[in-house]
Image (cartoon, rainbow, N blue to C red; front, side, top):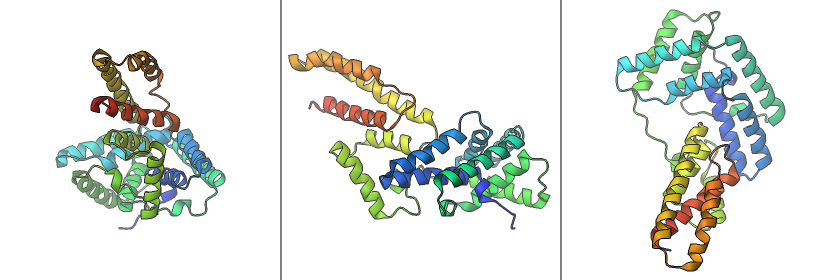
Amino acid sequence: MRVKHNKKRNVGIIFTQLTEYISESLVEGDSLRAKKALDILRKHFRKNSELFKEYKIFKVLLASNMKSRPEAITAIDEAAFRAKRLNNDVLRREKSSLIREINYTLNENDFYSRRVGDYRTHATIQTLLNNWCSESIETDLETIISFKSYLIGRLLEQKEPQDIEKMKTPNADSLTLRIMKEKFESKFSHDLTDNQVDILRSYAFSNSSKKVQETCSSVKQSLLKELTTFRGSCDNDILLSKIDIVEKKIISLRTESLDDDQISKYLTLTQLSNEICSGE
């Protein structure tokens, strides 16, 4: 059943394309190119914008696992209720502004040609959102029922948690992934620990700044406790004289508005934690 679908105005697709563009730019070492796209992402998907609200609804329908059909139907009904509360005129203007800025700021002819996995589900969700949000869009009842039935089936499917080793864009070959790994290891001079992978995963792949903040805050609080324990057991005067200084520096680290420099410091904290726990 074919329904006209504009992928440039699909909030899930365009968000994914932007994040992949940023990742590709960073891997290639083009920080200026990455910053342009990141600025666009932050500007247009800002909290309380209609675009961000629509994306939150979209993401729930795309990524959630439901245990039963009634639960899946409830999730879709709640998504429809929230979509109907969106200001469609404002949302339409925000999408047009986003597309215009991508076109003129990034100026990449093949930007929208980036493939997105599970295109059918992305198109299905956006078509339903369009119908829920705008009373002027008319899609026949049979199509809507078919789309909702398909989405219920997708919500009931068990989705495996993403593994950082499997997070490959369609354009990322083995060489690209090796370069990324080498950059990390050359910067920190050792293989990444599980905790460091967690930090990088939440920073690079999470769409929620809260997740990144929680991860870094946990690392920070854990290390402060370890320093307190270490102070009580350490008999090295030189190390003891440095603990207060290190502790103050750790306390001063922010857990909000994190950037590459701050993330690098948190990766260093995890290494310090490993050294303390191992007795090094």
